[in-house]
Amino acid sequence: MSDYVKSLMEAVKAKNPAQPEFHQAVYEVAESLALVLDKHPEYRAAKVLERIIEPERVLMFRVPWLDDQGNVQINRGFRIEMNSAIGPYKGGLRFHPSVNLGILKFLAFEQVFKNSLTTLPMGGGKGGSDFDPKGKSDNEVMRFTQSFMSELFRHIGPNTDVPAGDIGVGGREIGFLFGQYKRLKNEFAGVLTGKGLNWGGSLIRPEATGYGAVYFAAEMLATKNDSLEGKTCLVSGSGNVAQYTTEKILDLGGKVVTLSDSGGYIYDEEGIDREKLAFVMELKNVKRGRISEYVEKYPNAVYTQVDSSLDYNPLWNHKAECAFPSATQNEVNEKDAQHLLDNGVYVVSEGANMPTTIEGVNLFLDKGILYGPGKAANAGGVAVSGLEMSQNSMRYGWTREEVDQKLHGIMKSIHQTCVTYADKYGTPGNYVNGANIGGFVKVADSMLDQGVV
Ligand code: NDP
Figure 1 (tube, rainbow, N blue to C red):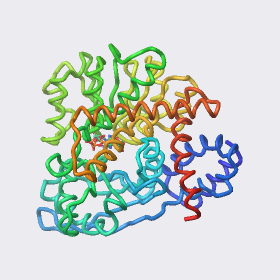
Figure 2: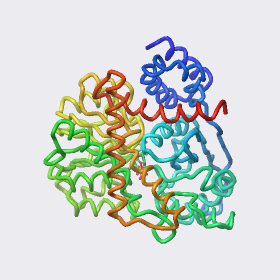
Figure 3: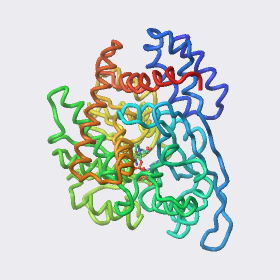
């Protein structure tokens, strides 16, 4: 660790105690940027990285609501407006009981670099609540989201801050949030992305993160004259990202053998084909059931419940060539990373945000496998959100093929940016450095242009 990174991290930890995920995200980026800052004293003199680490604004608010029994419930709402150097704040909302300030700050920090990589004019933000949608009725989810928006609406707008979905926030929640915003502001505006198609949404937005992660894997493989055809893939999660990752892997001739949720995972050696995937989509998106129900329908598959006494996740311990972590942060630790390598995995494309611990990442980098970090590999979601904003501004909608083609082009461009910057700073094939540096330079130069703000 360089002296600069060491002193930066000491300051970050002292100023932001009890935010381990934020420390982890900053550390990973700072390690890459040390290469740039050595060559560009102007960035260091203007304290660009130190400014990027400090959110422009943090909002934290009470969200009271009534459950179906008439009891008062109280959750905490957040919005982190991290950086607006290259565009309005943009990033998802997460509803999950684990949500806290540190987790949202790590996500907002990552988002700044990711959004810059997409080539679109979007700053970085993130928000959410410790509300748990699991087991809640539609009416409870609506009352909660309306209360959440009753505070958030003051702070967002199509030219200020444009939230989207993330864990626990899908089409249903975006609908309720949009309805309440419209009612409070008396304006029909493109203030959220991931909207329904009838009211300003973009085709391909639900598919975009998963499709993008697979396009990114295909680009990495193409550098070795290889493809996804015939490859066995491990996918975690069974939500939005996991579902469309699976769909695109099938399109490109691969085979998916795992999916999971917070209760456990299924292993289907025969492969999850389109019919089985349709069953999972219905199970998760409509019935809001558990992945364990998959083996009731397809008894040849095996369900393994989460065993919290284990220090690894057995999902990552199956023979495969590719892995697509698509559930949550730090779901692949050092031991999991070793299992992946031992089982023949040489492509990892992260649909989730920061799913691999620093030790796991270092193992992938040491072995020189094709490792696409989340801020590059999963940028397809926010990229199509950016395209949704453009369509809203034009009051016009592109076809499915047009949006998919633009998404594909953006993922190719992000891949190329990573390759270019990794090469330029003497670490060819290191997509972590490539993504961090490529994302940073545009934001940093814009901040220099705009003065000390
Ligand atoms: P969903 O809520 O649709 O699905 C999340 C999935 O991950 C569910 O299967 C969920 O299981 C599982 N999961 C969530 N938290 C945990 C946990 N703590 N432990 C184990 N499993 C967990 O979310 P998304 O698919 O949208 O998001 C998945 C990941 O992708 C997140 O890291 C998100 O930040 C990232 N991402 C999402 C984007 C998007 O466009 N949606 C864009 C870029 C990144 P369960 O149902 O049991 O909770």
